[in-house]
Amino acid sequence: MRLIHISQGDLEEILQKHTMFRAARMGGARAILAYHDLSGMTLAGQDLSHADFTGAALCQTDLRDTRLDYSTLFSADLRLAAMQNASLIRADMRGVCMRGAILVNADMTDADLREGTITSRDGKQVMPGQSTLSLSASSVADLSGANLSRAKLSGAIANNCDFSDATMRGCRIARANLQGVNMSGVNLENADFSMCDVKGANLRGAILINVTTNLTRLDQADTTDALTEAATGPTLKNLPLPLAEYLRQHISWLTSDGKTGRRFEINNYDMRRAPSFAHSCLSMMCAEGTMLYGLDFSYAQIQVSNFKKADLRHANFSHADLRGGEFAGANLNNANLQEVRLQPLELAGSRVVATSLVGASLRYANLAGAVLKDVDFTGADLTNANLQEADTDGAIFTNANLTGARFSEGQLL
Image (cartoon, rainbow, N blue to C red; front, side, top):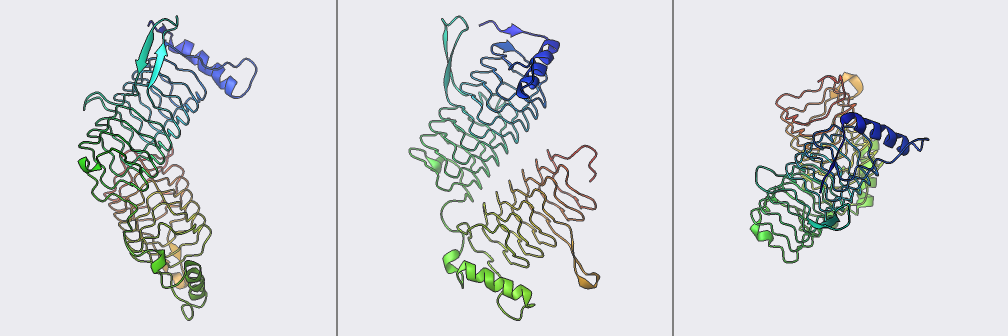
């Protein structure tokens, strides 16, 4: 099938009209780039939601930070495309080829990556398509940290691909070739993982809660330290008091300077079935080594608390007050820490309690707009974390891993 070749200038004109179309302005037109050869061109940062790229060649195209929500990429060729931080929500990607593409931290929520077929423009020739993410170890797609929640990947060829730390909640991956795939730390909660070939796959530290694995031989994969339905310690039913009463006693303990009530201490508990803690007052709580995966602490008051070595993956702390907290060695991968307050807590008598994230893991964590003044990140892993608009004045990043971390222009460390 012959593809249509256009210049970068012609492409810019199409993009301008699409921008007008998206803004419902007179003269706008949806970008119809089906069967076009856009290989090597630049589309970075553009809003191409609802655009049509059916059968298009996008080899080595720059699509970084591009919005492609609801776009049609049916049987498109995305080999070696740069798609870091791209948004592909509900995109039609059936039969797409993404060998060697880089989709680190891309949002592919509800994307359709199943098998597909395509006809030539004259309607005569029919070509079968299969979502292909890899061909050999040297041409695999990188989807580390990507959000593939509820995406459809049934029948995909993804052997040796990198899905490390990706979010794949509710994903359908039936009949996929996942030999040798790197899914370390991946979140597969409620995913359909049936009839997959996972021989030699790395699922170390993966979240495998309520996963359907019919005819999938997980024993052929490395599932060391994977999180399953099995409790990691005492649970809610083992608390000394009902949770609501325990929290009431904690408030009494705080307001009486410890004279009445009791401190909220859940060290080494598995609290995954706990209700939301949003807007709660949990100051000075103790949760060392506690399993708190996925819990909601948004807008909570949690000053001077102990979360050492706690599992806080995918937890929501947005807008919470965490000043003076101890998070040394905690796992905060993929946690939502937008606009949290983590600066030192100033007490009476000129006393100051600093916040520690020494040795903590914050891979793909969202710290956008957070107050991180004077926080100690020594030895922390901030790979691909989002620190845009965060206040990092005085923060300590000695020996921290900042590979791929995102900062705002001019932001100082």
